[in-house]
Amino acid sequence: MKKPLILTLIFVALGAMVYFYNAYNKEHTDVSTADVLQELTTSDLFAAFDADVALATEQYAEQVITVSGSIYSIDLENEKEPQIVLQANGDDGFIRCGFATAARSQVESLQEYSNIKIKGLCKGMNDAGDLDLLAERDVILSDCIIID
Image 1 (cartoon, helix red, strand yellow):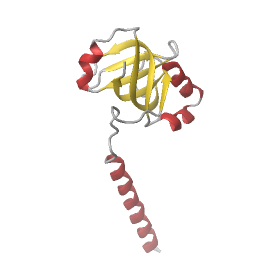
Image 2: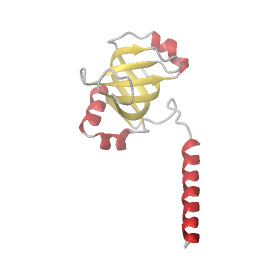
Image 3: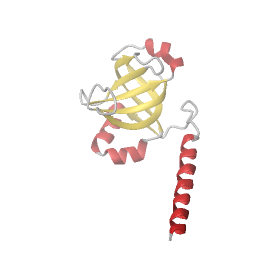
Image 4: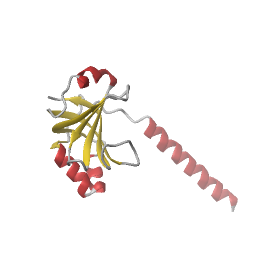
């Protein structure tokens, strides 16, 4: 009786180890060279997540997309990841774009309320419990680069 249980536990443990090894060693997406899944306005991207988070996550999460919109604010508090917050749905939600440390001077040179186009890796939607957000929910892009 104990032998099948022990074998089952060994197989489950081995499966978990393989899964976590593959997840940890997953190849990093190079946003600058990656193909763009879709080009969206900030309003359209936020609206997709606002309407159905699960569907939008399935469609956009871990995909490289471009968004265009107006800069709401520039957040330089995080030394390792300067951020731009784009207007999306009034004060109800924003698109938060994180950049590499090397892009800090480029981010600093931008002007609030100017229009911009950004390419980044969509991470999905976070709510106020996940981060210190301006609104209750923000759509997050990482590894962003400025297109124009």
